[in-house]
Structure formats: C-alpha cells, structure tokens
Amino acid sequence: MILNEKLKDTRIILGSQSPRRQELLRRLDLDFTVEIPEVDEHIDTSLTPEDIVCSIAEAKLTAFSANSYHDHLVIVADTLVADEHGTMLGKPADADEAKAVLSRLSGRQHAVYTGVILALRGRIHRFVERTTVWFVDLEQDEIDYYIANYNPMDKAGSYGIQEWIGRIAVERIDGAYENVMGLPTARLYHEMKQFLAQD
Image (cartoon, rainbow, N blue to C red; front, side, top):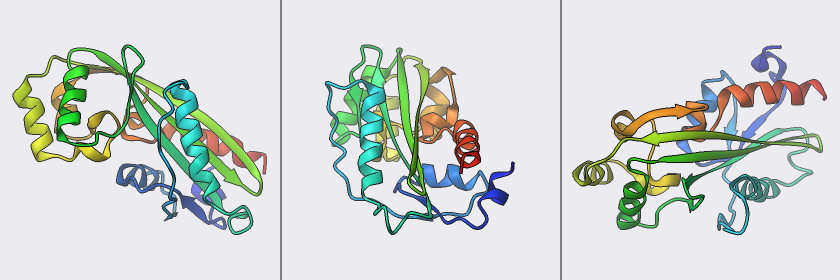
C-alpha cells in the first residue's frame, strides 16, 4: 500500500505550527493542509515523558470538532526533551534559559520523545517514539553563537538537530533522526498504513 494513493480521496489535516513537522510530512509525498489548534502546552512534571507528549497531543486533537473533521485524517503531535536525569526540557522562555539548557545537555545524553495521534471517522490511534542523543562537550562561545544566529526559542530542548548545532554537537543517536526534528516519519508511515488498513 502506497499511502499517497490510498489517501488520494481523503483530506489530511496536520494540526501543528511546526515548520519541521510540515516539512517532514511533505517528504512523505502526502498532500495536506495545516490547521493550528490553540491549546495549553503546560507540562505536568508528575507525568512520564510518554504521558506528557500524549496528553498534549490529545489536547491538540480535541481542538478539532468530531463532526466537522469526521471524514478527515487528522494528525497531531508533540515533542519534548528529557535530560539524563529525566528532567523535562520544553521550549525555552528566553535566551538565558536556552543557554542553561544547552549547557546542561553538553557532554551528556538526553532523550527526545514524540507523541503522535491519528484520528479518522471516530477511530483514534496513538504512539510514542523515543530517540536518545549524545552531545559532545560544547564550549560556551559555541552555545552563544548558536543562540545568537539561530532560533532555539521555538524548539523543545533549545535546539534543532537539523541546524548548525546538530552538525557540531551530536556525537551519536540511538533511534530515528527525524524524531528529534519532531516527527518520526518512518514509524508514522507504517503506523498510518496499519491504521488505514482497519478502515
């Protein structure tokens, strides 16, 4: 089953303002429109990372009316980063927080979690993808350069792996590279195939 053929008569909605997610979904050769739900992305630190990304993705999904979107394939996702001690690292509030987060990740490993939810005709399917990333030791001027020349404020964990810092800081990863960008495309493709086979 080739997804773009299977879905040629189904409208796909991506509920995300992330340009990285939009780019990654486009690379699957799928036609879709973007609608940005207004949700509270507050992190409840008493939950596990897997539960957090799923709860925020579920909040995004509830922004889409069941009646209006019944025959549309809705895709929503949320990504967060947790350091080696399990501390959740969302989007930084400012440059100082981004600097503190990147200093914390320097020379250590961290995990990136993305929760994805698919909805179509009353059926809902959820999954979570986890990727572990190891950073080399970063010098303070390298962190300062990244923050000054890129935009870490809209990224969980204060960095984008596809940017300059990903090329100089990432020692190795265990898991899907695209997941660190915000959407695990290979897993999404195969989860969508299984989901649609039940339709």
